[in-house]
Every structure is written in structure tokens, then in C-alpha cells.
Length: 387
Image 1 (cartoon, rainbow, N blue to C red):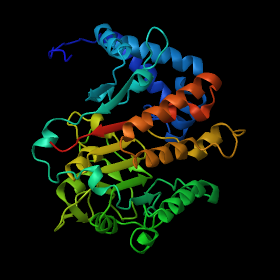
Image 2 (cartoon, rainbow, N blue to C red; image 1 turned 120 degrees about the horizontal axis):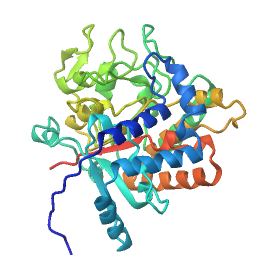
Image 3 (spheres, one colour; image 1 turned 180 degrees about the vertical axis):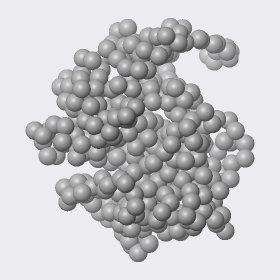
């Protein structure tokens, strides 16, 4: 039986919210005021609440108490008890954009990720004048994917490469070879877009995206200014400007020495599924005006964009913080590869929900930093199928 629509409003207590969000910020790798970015990452990995099993559980409980109204939780539990599949559609405010909703803990110790699937809803205005209507996955699933993995950065870019050694690149090389052999990736893309550590400009990326593609997978650096809508950008090989959300929205391909290049004749065309695994790829929701790479990609034809809520520690950072960590423990790479695999399935969000639950089980059993929510709880999925 379908219940009638009932509108409910809940007012959060500011003092409680301020305190718990401050605790969350202390646990995340984003620099605090005056803090060096590398120091911030090591702080989160070594002493942050998300790196310690007991302190993480305490934070998860406090977040739930502050952000999960009792009547809403009761409604969720009623559906779960009845055997229903529960999906939460969420449009977070700027203050709540970094909240890892999946880890929120109920009174009996269960987490929201065990009870529900969580998807972000873009603002309704995104659908109103969409530049490119997304194709359905069934129409395109047999097409090859396009990969841009840690592209070579312009000399003026202050960031460094993510994959610095053969062992860093090896998992991605194996994955691409596997997909190429199965016909799901084109190695000859190297002529235009080198898939791993290659030189990739916005012009080359735009050209490759105009060919028949099922999905786009980007693993690398994302730059953003949270208070400046449209500033979020993919760092490619262009000098001097990265590829910003505003460039994509305006159809700008050629860099004009600023973040907004000249409008292109054909504009940008995104495949229906896009993954952006980089630092705060989902910065859209941290601005008062919800606009960044996620919204720009949806406007350009994506119906699902999976990305991350906060700064992602590299695998090298994990090993710097924990020198005795086994060499094959590569948490951020593991996250990226799981997203890649899930994006080939009929229901990527459900697949990644299952993976997150498995990670949570390992975290509860062992408390190893490799299974910390610092990685797996960073994921977000913005869903905007054609209307």
C-alpha cells in the first residue's frame, strides 16, 4: 500500500549541529585554517576520528543524534522491517555537504548504509533547461568507456602526480587490459587520450567524448573554491587553465588563458555515467548556489555522477602515515576500481552499497586503516535520469 504524501519539517538545533560538524571537520583531511594540506591529510589518517574504530562509532552516533530525526528513522525502520528496499534522495545544504550519511548509527548499532541506499538529488532547476538529454544505459552499455587516469599535469600546476611508481599504476593497467580484451575499452585511445599518466588536454578530451562512449572514468586531481560556484575543475595537461565546471556548462573547449574558454561549436557531451575520483569532486553542494562539476556534467548528458565528498588521501599518504602497512594495501585505488566495476552494472549505486557494507564489516572486525570510512564513506552518487 502506498502512503499519502505527508510533508514534514524538522528544525536542527544549531548548538548541537555546530559541535558535531566541528568534530567531523577535525576528522577529515581538508586543511583547517592555516593548516598545510599535507599535514591535514596526516592528521586525518593518524589521529582523526574516522581512523579509529571506537572514536568513529562515537562520531557516527553523534551525527545520527544531530541529523536523523526520530520520526524519519522510525519510518525507515518500519519499511526495512517490512522487507522494503529503502532509498533516500537527498539534496544537502552547504553545511551538510561533507556529512557521510552512510555511517550514521541507529540505537541498535546499525548504520544507515545497512538500511538504505542514498542518492543525491540535484536541484529541480537542473532538469528544466538541460542542454543534453541523457541516453539510457541499455542503449549505450555495449560501447567502450573512456578513461583519464592521473593525466600529466601542466608545469605550473602546484599539485603532483597521484601515481608515481609502477606499483601505483599496476592495478589500473591490469584493469584496462582486462576491459580492452573484453571490448569495453579502446587502447587505441592513446592516440588522442592516453588513459594512464598521459598528456590529456581539454580539446582531446572533448573530441574523445564526442565518439560513442558508455561512460567516463576520471581519476586524478580536482581543484575547487567552495564559495565560488562553477570554479570546480578537472586538472588536465592544459596550461594555464584547468577544465572548470563553467567551461563545461558554456561548451568551452579552448583555453583562453582564463577558466572560461571560447565556446565550442559542439559543446560538451557526457555519457550517461561519469565517475570523478578526486579531491572533493562533489564540491557543488558546498556552495550556496549548487553548481560545480557534478551539475555541469549532468547538464551535458550524464544521468549518474559518482564522486567524493572530501579530499581523498592518496595511497602514498596512507603508507606515509603507516609505514608498516602492507605494500598491496591501496585503499584509494581500491575505491576507484570498485566504482569503475560498479558503473558497468545495471544498478551501480546498489553495487557500491553492497561493497560499502562489506567494508563496514571489515572495519568493525579489524579496525584496519585500509577499511576506514575515511575512504569508502566519501562516495556520493548524484542521480538525474531523463524526465
